[in-house]
Image 1 (cartoon, one colour):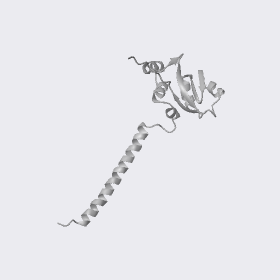
Image 2: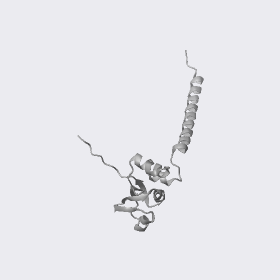
Image 3: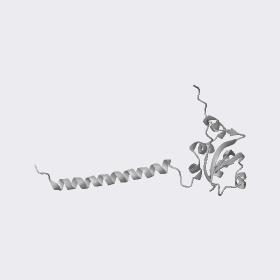
Length: 141
């Protein structure tokens, strides 16, 4: 039995329409999910810090949150490592945000800053990224 060419052409056309519709739905779903769960464009804090520090700033009780999540605190100040643009950053800028006991080396600063100061510091253009220090654990054999 010979194949109806008109049927084959129509099925090919419907196949393309199906792909276009599915792509449109997928694209709309991605946009929706990114607006719900993604980083907001104006929120520099979330762009320059890991979630654990962002949640520390937003926590109702930051001291207990830090204790529960292994974040080092000293006199209500959090220990952080800050990646900076070494051409822009200055000593005056660091004291402006209340950074204490800091050490500076090759574009990285390790020190203590108040939890409230974290948000302000993350909005500074010279700051590239802020993270908690890495904790090494001794492995027993």
